[in-house]
Image 1 (tube, one colour):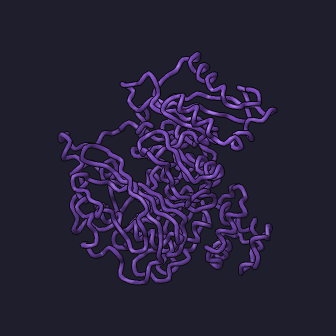
Image 2: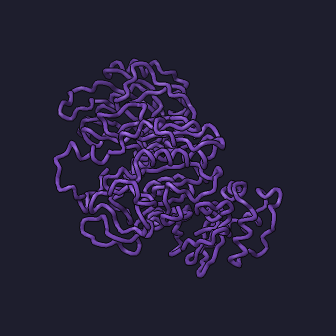
Image 3: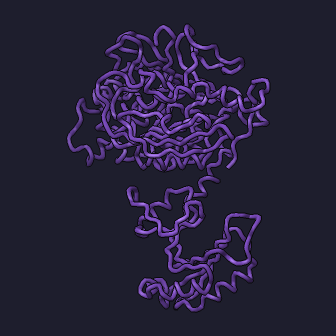
Length: 123
Length: 432
């Protein structure tokens, strides 16, 4: 699972009102090289919840020097875009789980694929 | 991209003819269209036409010389092709036809191998292979501009794909759907019934980053029984990511998830530039969602596959589309599109059955016949309004005229001799 996807996921456990962002508990993380596309990264940045990205990066120990807030004029800042690119697309959680911050319910991730299915009483 | 240009056919336009003459397009427009179309074979700048070669000649001699001369200069190279639709011509006959064009003021030299300019004499011998006339019904002559992307249908054929399922969408239709959705470079595309990812493969080819989900654990993980005739189980390299890798677009792979489309896991924001999908019809793949058994019909025997779904409930077809339209209204970027297949029982069909949503505008509805009494319709919708915070659209059954199609599976089999009701295990993959 990539952090771009994680940024868009939320807990859908019944009754939960503060299900975002999901906490990441990773037991295996891989780095995977993906071609850098500055236009794509620039396009994605406004769609992101920046604090959730920072939190996820911290949880995985991958934050490095990512700023706590979006820098202005990021479209032309290639260094910054490369940092964001790396986090969004190159860091992959292979094994672990996503945890609902309110209910504690865990959604397993195996072979890089999250299983978001709820059982009948949770739906 | 030349989206938004008006479709302007010349007079006597026949939609079913393999030859279309259009006005009001620049060469750049045409190149843009041909870079994406998997339906169009080739495009030409029309210089002359007629029912006979004599008429063609008159027409060509009337074409302004100043439009011809840039392509006929002394030091340029060219070749003339002869293309005959619905007829095979001997080589010598082709040469004769080219020679008969000697009234054209070509000043350059012929180069068969790498000409700067290519021209084409096109002859239309009709569309009936059992009734081929001696002489063409119509003749065109023009300067070749470019070819369409029909090669993608062959190169991306499901027959050669690493990972397929019983209902993998064929390559041609996948690319058509991507075009309907106006998928472009750097888009984010989502398929909520992703299966083996055929639609994502097509979208990645057009430069989009792709993600998908499916309720079926085995399909998402690439496990379980193979859909190929001589293969029992799927191999280790069979999954959606491997399919993208096969075509060199693994860079565009975002994620796939095991998830129930009726219970979205995405936050409510304009996340996706396109939602493209082929929901289950309840025939070859089951329609399922998580939930209790309490007040639903028992599923047909032998129909569910092992799936890690805690408890399955029949997902009524009409609910699938209500949920899909709602999901799209909330998560599509404004002005962007939802493209999906709607299964239809033809005797009951009317246009009112096509699901609607106040935030989505219906752009197109094209039928593909599946049998005498069933078809599926390719529906394209565009987001025109943000959803207001109000009652969930579609909870009122009177607003869902598609209800009757919930029994689609029974209706599908009703016109067919009732066999044992058991599904074929390994149906042939739909060829192109």
